[in-house]
Length: 458
Image 1 (cartoon, rainbow, N blue to C red):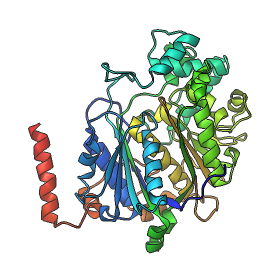
Image 2: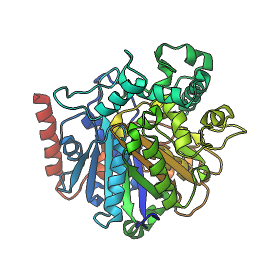
Image 3: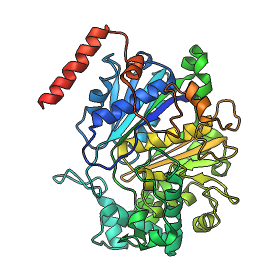
Image 4: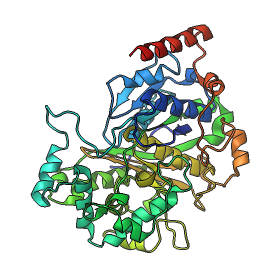
């Protein structure tokens, strides 16, 4: 069945915090607030223009979204809290786009964050069925269980099924670490040799520590708008990026095929890619840049294949040829941000941070990691349990991105510098510029004071 035509939806503004180690030093309220303020500044609008809010997080109480959004203003708009495992951020983008494309919204603010615990992911609910319990059962029946944390077992086994050559998985990690040095928001910005990656502590065959993403604290946000909103604000059109295609899919019965690759969502990724790329009218190989869900190097290998970037069964050859990084053999630069492996993985923020990276490329702002001829950008975000979101972005004018100098970007960015290559905080003056003006300044200030006092008492 042909994809249904949807009303145009644009990403008008993006913003994010630097991703950091989860040490409890910054609360989720601050992470979400900083990301949202930056996205509103980037969009050139105020919170009064926003008619729907989508809050994305996995760890936290159920209305944490309202706690973050009330800092922008208490305008009584609908605020929905989203939790879809590691694909939470992209699920929020999908919900925002769906609201706008259906006519239920003209301007949605999507904010994602995570305040995590150090160490591997684990369940916080031991008195009920684990949503990925069947995944563990299938893994035990096919590859058995080891003492390693669950996630690296699941994804590592998929890598082992795809092919057994360890160097190819390590090469993926080497490339992503190398890319990270140009992303100021990355949790880690270290370069490693192939040998160093292979000799780092073993986690679960074929994975070593440097092939696994870290847990992280961080926030990211995006402003999505309709065509009518953009037409009413023509001075903002030069920063808008079109969502040309998008799909959210869930697991297929192949989850129980006893294939380790199917267990990590191969079919739902393939289906999401088919729908999103079909809506955009392109193939994966028409994309010049891609941010994909490399929670582990083994998963990136499987996804290069599932998304259609390589020939089936040939992802390892694609990696070996230099096709996924900068150089003479580039086909598509994968994870120019450094990916989850280097940038970090605060679950609720990850998908929106991927969006921000690709928006910066299509605007021509990511000048220290630009990909020549960028016209289409591909995004993939995955959550076990399961959900996969694939999104295609393009410039509304259909042209290739022209790389801009940072001084020029600083004049139009709304923050006075190039946020694609420099990670800064924000000032109170900037926050005042975009917070709600509907209520008196006294009332808004009083509200913020009361919220801070209540937090201090706790």
